[in-house]
Length: 627
Image (cartoon, rainbow, N blue to C red; front, side):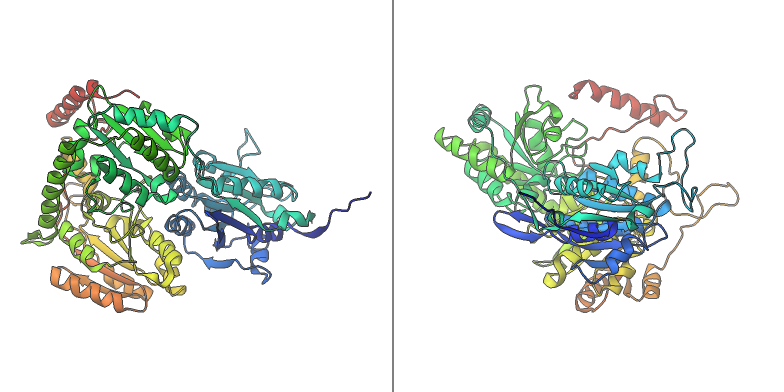
C-alpha cells in the first residue's frame, strides 16, 4: 500500500510562525495557547525573512514593536513570569548588535527559570556575501557568529542552516520551554538567507501540539522517607521558593505549615504565594530577610527547601543555618537545584509532593513543637511593629525610601502588581511588602538585572490586561539603564505606573563599599570636581518627570508623603502610563537584620578599615558549609 505524506511548500520563516501559532499547554486539564505573539525590532537580518512571515495575516500571533532588544526580551520574560510560565511571547531581532543586546535578557530568564524564546537573525549560511553588515568574524573558527554568545546563558541553543532543520529545532525548543525542570532561555539562530528558503514541510508538523504540564510525584517510598526525616527533627524550617509559585502549591504549603507547625520563610520568587499574615510565614530569609526569619533559621536543625535554588542571598552565603547537625532536604523538579547545599534530593512537583508527605506525617501523628510556633508568633508580632515603624518613618530632609514603600503598599489593592528588580528596593520589598494576593509580587532577583523594571512592568501588564494596575518601583540607576519600553506601553495603550525613587546614585552598592572600609567612590551621581579630578562634586539633579512628559506620559514630581499619596491616586485614574518622580533621602533604606553576605574583600590594602573587614571575614569563613 502506498502512503503519501501531505506537504506544504513554504519558507523557513513562514513554517516557524505557523508552528508557533499551534502550540498549546495542558495544565491540570486546562488547555492554554502557549505562544501569544512576537516582540521584534526589525533589521536587515530578519525583516524580509521572518518579518515577511509575521506580516502575513494567516496566523493569530500578535506582533509587538520594541524599542530596545534587551527591553523587549525582558518584557517577554515578565509576561511569561506573570503567567506562571504558562504563556510566552517570542522575541526576534536582527544580527550582530541587535542579537547581542538580548544576551543579558537570556541570562536573566535562565537564572530565574523563566521560558524565553529568542529568534535572532544570523549571518548568511551560504557565506557568499560575507562579511555582511554587522557580521562578527573569527579567523580561528569561521562557524562562530555573534549568536554563539548566547550559549553560556541558554538552556537550549540551535542554529538552523537548512530549512528542514527548523522542524527538530522548533520541537526541541518547545520541549525545553514547557519543561518545569529545565526551562529558561531558548535560542534558535536564523541565518538570514535560510529564513527565506523554501521546503516541502509535512502538514503533520503544523498540527495542533499539546504539551502537558506533568506533576511528577515522589518515587515509591520517598514520601515516607522524607516524612521520617522531618519527624526526627525538633526545629524544622521550610523555604518557599519560586517552584511553589509555578506549581500552584501556595495553598498546599500554607496548609502543610499550619497542620504540622513548621515555620516557613520566603525567597523573592516565592514571596506572596503564602499570605504574609499566615501563622507560620516569617517573610524573607537571609541577606534580604526579616529579623525573625533569620533568628529562627539560626536555630533550625532541618531545612525543607521547596522549589528553590538556594542562592547566596537566601542562604546568607551559607551562613544562615549554622547548626553543624543541620540537615537539608529539597523538593524540586530540577535535580541540579535539588542537590545544592548538600541537600538530600526529592525530585517531584511541589504541590504533589507536599500532599504525599502530609499523608505520611498524618500516619505518624506528627505535630511540630508548640513552643517553636509560639516563638514564631512573637517574632512575627515584633516584625509587624518594625514594618509599621518603617512605613511611617519621617526625615526632616524629605521622604525616606521605606515611607515610599509604605505609601505604595497602602495604595495597591487586590489584582494590582508590583514589579522591581535591582538596587536596595528588592531588599526592602522582600522585608517589608505585604502582598495583597499571590500574583501581586513580581520580583526579578535571580539575576538582579538593572533595567528590567520598566519593560518588566510592560510584560506584566500585557499578562494581566485590565484585571489590575501594574506598578514598577525603580531606582534612578535602574531607570537610566533601560526605560524606553515605556514608549511601547504608550503605543499599546497598556498603562503602567512607574514609581521612580531618586536618591542620586547607586546607594545600595555605596553602602556595601563603605561597610568594607572603602570611601565613597564611583557610586553617587556627582559632577566631576575640577579641583580634584574626581567624581565628588555637586549632586546631579535630574527632572525625570519632565523626561516622562516628553515621551507622552502623565508625570508628577513629589517630595512629601502627602504629594505622593495624591500622585498615586491620580495615577490610578489616568488613561496612560504615569511616572512619579519621588525625591528621597539618601541612605534611607533598611539595614541588614542579623545577616551576612560574602564579597571579595581585598586581602591587602592601604586602608586599615579594609584590612579589618577582611580579617572579620576570615573569622566567619571556617564556620560555613563548604558545599
